Image 1 (cartoon, rainbow, N blue to C red):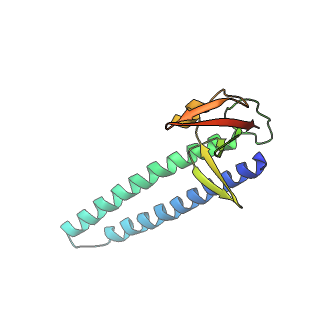
Image 2 (cartoon, rainbow, N blue to C red):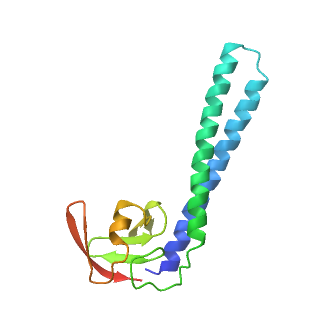
Length: 148
């Protein structure tokens, strides 16, 4: 599978995540504003505090998603790689990986690609390895069949 197709699917997934988060943030902000108009006393304060906590959590998740999107945007999917590095598509005898951001499992057509960050435990094990290199992770050995 072409790296450009994997990269485009990653960009789409992250963009959808950002859009969903923004929608959730908008809804929580609307509910907080709605609570401002309430005159129910302590019930109002509790609902407002819960809304603010949810908003803080969503904003933190949004900031993380934007950072991941920025990292992904800086990767050139057309750049060939001979070693496992940021932007590399690695095929082992057990699975396919794309070193980019911590998106996780991504299904493209019939293929499952594991999109992982170079700073993740498996990403750290992979960094710098070449074709025919071996990776030992979670008690299992895998042979690298290709790096692109």
